[in-house]
Length: 361
Image 1: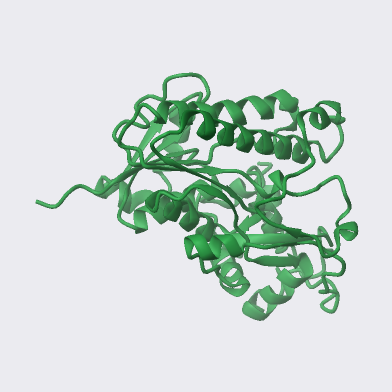
Image 2: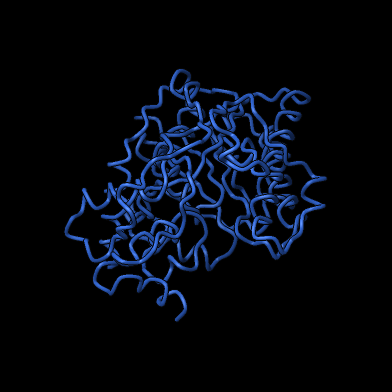
């Protein structure tokens, strides 16, 4: 009789990257026990088409854990061989600094502490962020040629976060970056002091794109955080202006999920930046218009010749390639698959930009 597949515990299954992380483990024939914060969130997740097959096969279990940082985890870790911790606040500036700091650090430490008493656990992957490396306080043009590797840390500290004006538009990213740095440092301190039986790897992705399988309708795009509304804004109409001329690093969420799997499965410890390249929105829309000329009325045209990056910093993801064997998807694949998914949920059955109105209804 064949042995049952190993099980991974994944936190925050309602999230974008958590969805692709769960899919990575399921694709590699693991079972998944995933946490959400409430019964309503569990119902929402179970109704997503992406999970239908795995729920029927009994390889996906959804459990409710209201507070990851508040003590018992409701059997989330019982008997699992791996943990992928991704749940963290984003886009909730009204919470203030403490509202970011406490759940980000307490949730991660509670997972690590309780995992130490579960002998079956052999590997843990933890979501950090490029925000834990990036110097958001220095303009990008003044960072020309700077290379970000795993050895670099953001200058954001608790003192910076406490002193930052919560009304400033950058407050969310200041709080988020500082919390991620402190959480990573706390994880390193835990490993050094406790010497657990499992490996611990942390991952620092930049902007993340891929099919948005965690949402199922246009109305959800405008009310979610992260890349879905940013990507959808590029499809607001041919003659609309580009929302931003900023440069940004990016990676496919499916590659991040694969990195989480490989670290757990291979019991790999360490800090990893995961990144496929650098772009700006003009580069994205130029490529989208090449890939989907039939969507001319939707994809912003902008200024096609204005696709140069100019003075900029870069991310060196060599370690993730050498240690984990990652082979990052090209931009064309990420963009095509993402826009194809939006087409599946009806994005192009409505007028350009209709998703913005749908989210307000």
